[in-house]
Image (cartoon, rainbow, N blue to C red):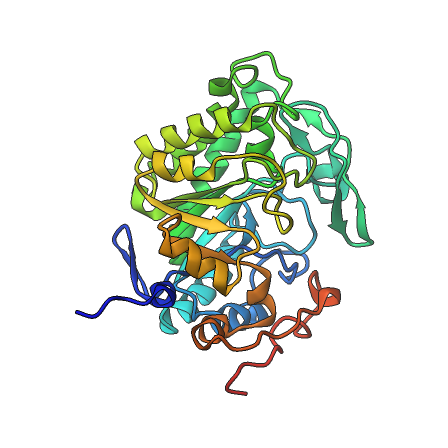
Length: 365
């Protein structure tokens, strides 16, 4: 058999647990704020958006809140009502018909929210009452996040149960699996990192305590779905949403060992600052890959050349592309041909209709 060229590996099938992916290209979660006003349910415009991008071996949906409390931005889709579940079912049917696989990213934003989005206009919740130096997107546009309140330990089992119920709904909606969002300064990441977690109870202080909530969420979801249908997203050193840790290597070395013991399908790792520099802080990402026996999805500012090189040296199993998928619905075909990419219209990223969402041209067009 002739030797495989390095640039062919990206386009070869891959077995993710018992799921056969058509290629090693992953569409990363991309918040677009197009869910239906008033219900936060996926709609027909979103069906078309995901259908267009079904050349990816695996699609991970935009982050989707597990409850109203978990919402941090206007018009993001949820996965906690019947209407939302039915909307996702239509998307999944379209993606499966086009030959791709799809996981939903389960989300609780924690303190990255605004009182206008919270139940009863209440304060967002967090591990500690520390306001994030960050912004969120509401009806009036981008605004500062609201002052959060610290969660009482008695409230945490309810949040874990919300994740489990969201996983049940994901199964009902026909998803191939779920990805737990434990990155980018949202609730689970806020608990994991000592810059945002100043608790003195069983969920704060030591690394084991700070990772406790994440692992409780994982364990609850594993009672709903087999481990091969569950992944998790991590961002060890990204400063997104004003989080930081004094010793991220120790935190994520520990956490990934615990995840490996639970035999999850994959870890989806943001290498560096989310959407920014890859060398933002020292970190040994290869150590996470070596510590985890499932698939390693590499993410952050990957282009074709870096993806090919990373797979060639076996530093990842799958490569996630984010913003290139926004402006290139046929990204996989463009990567295969090494064809030029459409430019991104940044003005249409968040909210709106079809413009900048489903109207980007394909090579065939």
